[in-house]
View 1 (cartoon, each protein chain N blue to C red):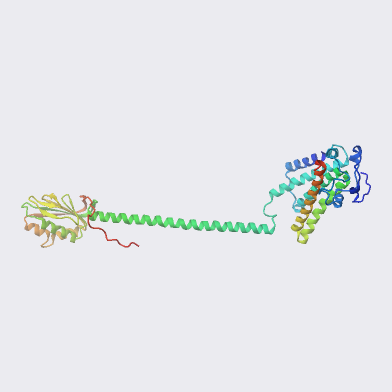
View 2 (spheres, each protein chain N blue to C red):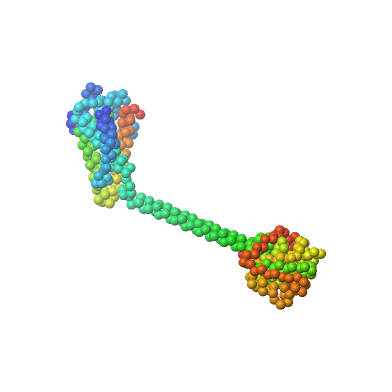
Length: 296
Length: 110
């Protein structure tokens, strides 16, 4: 605290430092700023011969002595200022960590905005893609269910036609008695034709289903329907419009008349529920193949 | 030692209080902190050079802080606040580095 004015250049020419005993109090009026200004390159390896060039031991001693607890004004001020500095550092760090978008510069905000924008676009794109695939899957599953339903209906129709599934519905039960064994295969065939012409959808004779490939032949005691022996009385079940079927049996010169001429008799029962439950086992055609059709 | 204790004390108080920086101070505090750090390193170097003066230290500390804040304030008013802040930080950073180099040379002879 000598306060002696010094020229800024002085420290360069200053000789060796003062004796250690008085060193802490040998304060110059030169501020660190001035010193710095006088030696902008003082830290660049040119300090070998400079004034206060101590050995490291003495430098440490000096530093410790300056920082040792003494109730001087210097220490009080230093402590206060250092405390304020620490407080300010923490406050600033805290503030920086709290900072949201409000303190960012314009270009940073623009960058963040563009970033967010791009992100949103990407997400929207993703949403669109997912939605379209959702629609696709939905329509596919609907189509699939539709196709399955259609296929099942078709299977049922074909099964009834081919005689592989039992069928039930309104229709007639036609019983032909044949005491003289005169009702032969052509008459039964005519009866079947007549029933088909009247719209019968499923027919069975005795325990044999009548389908496209059914044939009739005469045997000694009755009929052979597709190779199965059927004996009188012949019970023919037909599903279709009951009244039409019954009427078809009664037309002049029709089935009833023919059977009567052969010495037999017919009995037509109209029923709401006729069950045709004789089945054929499905056989794959050995030679015939479907003609390939161009599928859409 | 005393200044180090003061610094730790300040840090601890800051951690405990979790102070909110007033809005009007927010642009200036970071620069002021850097300026104060520069003053502190300058003081340490002055001690090692044997030219430390507590009065000069206090004045230079305060004037550093005030001038730094004033430069930022002026820059804000002139519309070059961020550029001027960068400039101040660069200058103070250079000074801090050169001071630390001198301190290192004193203490470690290297």
